[in-house]
Image (cartoon, rainbow, N blue to C red):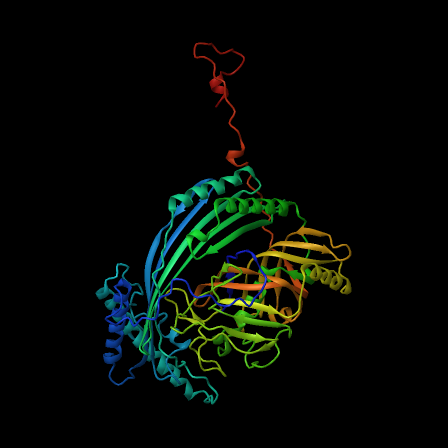
Length: 613
């Protein structure tokens, strides 16, 4: 992975405790054997039955003479329905409803111990130009949206045939490497053995009141007209429903559903020195009714306006190294980027990765008062629904609460069905977007601390640390848009966060001043081990994380954190001018007088018609 990103945050209510137990998943039906004659009438089951029938046919009969047969096959079909409304300046600019279905075939030859999977298989077909170089045609990865099971089986048939040929080619290329390499006696198996599961979610409603949201968007975006320095803004309302079917040759059969709604308020201004200033609010919910009401969205827009106008007059500061307090959103981004991505299992065995935590199970990797947990079964915290919640991952494995770091000691990795020594089983973190190949990814990352103090005490500790280091001030990072990190071995092991609101705190008086012009950077092992203490309350940060397997919904739950030394670098200045003319709605039209047609124009002056040109 070159860059992993965490995007689209959410600022919500304070959370007093991190030990909230998992709530039962709403709308979940009892386990159902889809082929049972007692199953209720459900159109979704016809799709699942068609997948299982084609899967059985392929496992029984798909052979190429002289070559291995598949030992594992799974099908996944994902139906995504989306609603997307965007408005600016009091008008609707985009209205994009969309629906599509994608399929994914995972076919493996060899055995659980050694099979065709791995990065080599992707290199077999890329750049193929026909003849001996590879295929000249690739099977579409779409599925019929109208539920036609015959068409679905045809699409699966073609994709399976293609995948079988790719797997055979990858398998023999992988085996041939043994000619040049010593055998690895401690090599992990290629694929984990998992028990089959059967589950069917109850259908989830997916309402979307388009007319109501159009009115809310118009009203909310019109509020920006009274603030010409905020020269562009938008409100976007999104809704997405995902229905997922999964079937495997091991016997698993799943139908799961998920809905995520969102409202995003974004605006931009420009500082007098040309720096582009961005601010916004993002809200997520499981249902339309849980989204903020119109008055809350107006309040969010007004807060964004106030912050941007304050940032325009805030001083830009020079690059900084010293103590800083990260509020919960920024703490979440720090641990997500600096720790979470580096604990994704596939990165431990990839020679192109930095392998930051490889071979460190049982070793102290963080301050001993910190514990890091990733829990996809956690449904909500403090009344806030979490984006990263799911019951089964994209490989059909039940989601599991996983303690990654306990009291500073590394205890486990995030694991898909790709085993990583010393672990040979998945912990339900194989995730992906649509029809991408799953890999180990985060879900709901929870930062727990045994060294907690009040916000007031944390600020006093910040001031004392700044004085101890001879710094005139410390910093408080109150809001952040997201971050990204590089985990590859060929690049620097670093991460970056983009703060929106940074305050300079006088080391002697505690006076706070809003500043701008810097972004958070650092190396993971150094930065994360300089956490001195945390606050005694936490907040939820909902968003989406992008990596090799696509964008997946995630959450962090984290407290404030005092970092003994943090580095901020200067942001790139655009040095561009703001719009030259004022916005049209800021100029009132002035009435123009027109002389009667019968009145002759004075010879020494132009006519009123000429004057108005």
